[in-house]
Image 1: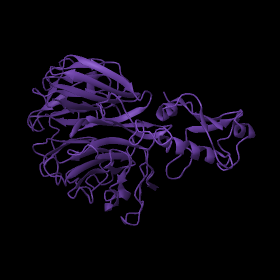
Image 2: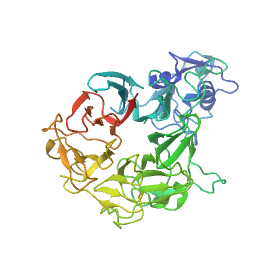
Image 3: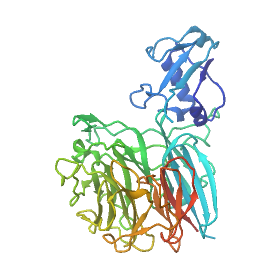
Image 4: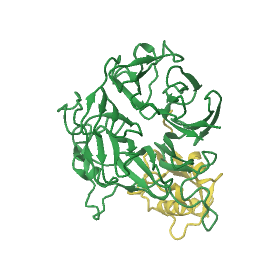
Length: 98
Length: 392
């Protein structure tokens, strides 16, 4: 199972507490994880990736295993520790605003 | 017993203020959607328990929320309270995609950007939600970048009324400092086919066929900040209001100038009269007196606060030109708040109640048509919008 940590506002929107666990079939990439996340929680569509372009929203980043994966290709395989469930995949909201 | 429900959108959440018929005792509920910008909330005239809210965020984009129990509980239409086969919330409510389909013949066009170049339309947020006068499941949404969308399934899906952007003047529209937003949607209570919208900075537009086709209605507007001050489009209209008994008469607060039309927008004339400044954002009409209108003058486009540090609502009982300041209960020194375009509303009790919210987080109410004022709340986040429901 893939573990995903969402920012608090998206946890509220999806009505979940703590981590989300997802069964991601096939190759585990960022897009595959987000596809699985949005399939299970449709209200999150458009909040992480743009509806039309499917590009990352500008103020969000993706971390895992103490690495910033934001600028990796969306179809690149995620680290083995994320695939095995040892480490979570983190969706992070930028520190900005007031 | 009668009462009112004041729906307040703020920079950090939504609040529902419920008052008795005397509008003296208030219950404050909220924040709902804490931490999110709530650009607008409005109830359905056909079902007062049905509320819609535009929840938006620079981080996470646009969400539409719906309540079927007067704001006690909320759901993303199609999700929230509705569970999918695996027990998880189902549905999405936030998909606003501009219509570029060949069926409409309206390809995605460009508008004018700040530097004068052409720029593609990009959806950012919903500024205004206008529920149908007759169907709780039908709602119009005015969005940034300026366009009009409609749902007929209670907010589950939204379709653009592409005739507005496609009617021909779109490439001349340009964003104001707040973005290129469609912020006003008025539905004619006597003619189901007629509706009005206003866009900053493009102007006012009217449809006489239910939103299929549109035309600019800006004749008589004069705007020094555009190359041709009398251009067909390009005017920064801040707000339009009408009285339900006389929907052909429109009142407008423009970037500068308070305007009036007696022919459904075909022509406009200035009625700023003796206002201390004719810059401002809000304008509204008394519920029972079609010639009584309200504005909140703001010093200038570069100084968004009341002149002389005095928060004054101005009322005209003659449809403009002759204005009186309403000050009783409002701060008359050291007040430097703003009142944004969707942040004034009236109830339909007798006497008419008038309400407005400020960038300082106050929501003021008058239970005597503006003669005197008192704050319902003083310390909310900056207020973006105020709507009122009159409850039987």
